[in-house]
Length: 306
Image (cartoon, rainbow, N blue to C red; front, side, top):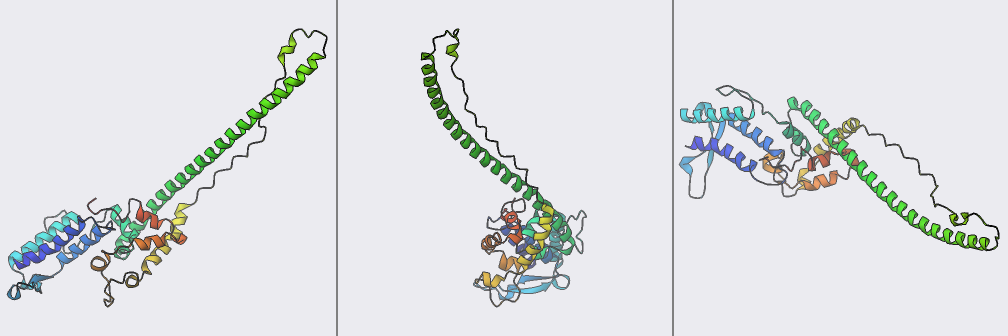
């Protein structure tokens, strides 16, 4: 039973964390699954030391699968590995493989590149594909943002022009009324001095139409569309440097200051990393990467259950 418990405790921890609605978990589900697979395929498990269990303590001790596990324990472990490989590693066979790589979804790869905690976890085999997917998302996001800003600018310009036109029209109507009154007075004064019959044409009066003859400003040519691919290639190295330069212990004093190497899952996962992204948004060298992490298909705020 202790061997069975040691195996299920590994998968139990992943299931609880993946289904837990906590902040900044978008990239962590893949990291949790990768660690689970690695732990299940290891030869050593920490099993409960049944001989030393007390009412207050539940001590564990290392136990080798190949050398110390019972046949039932080995079968349990093999089945757990096979199920994990079939779900997450693309294993279509009826037996577990000696080595297997986790198969990231496109969203998981992009999210892993946008989460400052998990960039280092992307394997060498996945780095090219991760960058390609991230570049495609960056360009798509940048184009949408550019079009949105241009539409908003056009709406603002149209509203300003409409307000100016309305003001000019009102002023023009006042001017027409004043000119008309003055012209009528002059006409009547002239007619009083005329003795000759005008053939009934005197009722025509003086016609005038107020027109704004000022030339409209020439329509500005559209701004050239930025090269978003080039923008990505410029900002991407800065994003990598920014992620690698973070001094986690200084940023988060609650971390174990004596621990030499921090673990992504055990140490960094619980952190509220939002303040790092707020700072990143103030650095123009990082391009749109902070915004992609906040609001895109690769958002690090996506719930793992999604």
